[in-house]
Image (cartoon, rainbow, N blue to C red):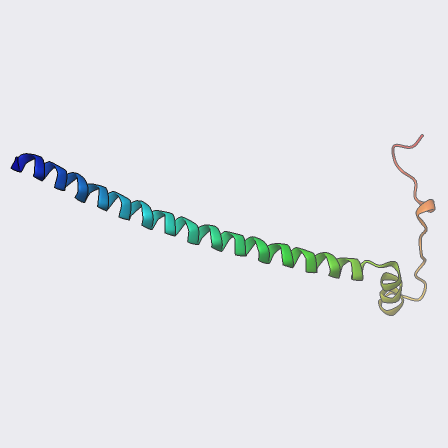
Length: 89
């Protein structure tokens, strides 16, 4: 009888330890997932801001204004029709 009680108590203690361990590991994984989601959100926001900044800086009017401001006065604006492709025949 004592042997059965000892076995049952051992199983209960072992089960409790296993459940506690799994619960802690799950909590750690949830924290890591939350951290990664926040990092992803931050990166998406940063990418959005970078795209907006690039669109602003690369706007033709802005490029022309900066070219007039920083380049020599004999700067010649090129039209895309002036370009020839190497693989054209």
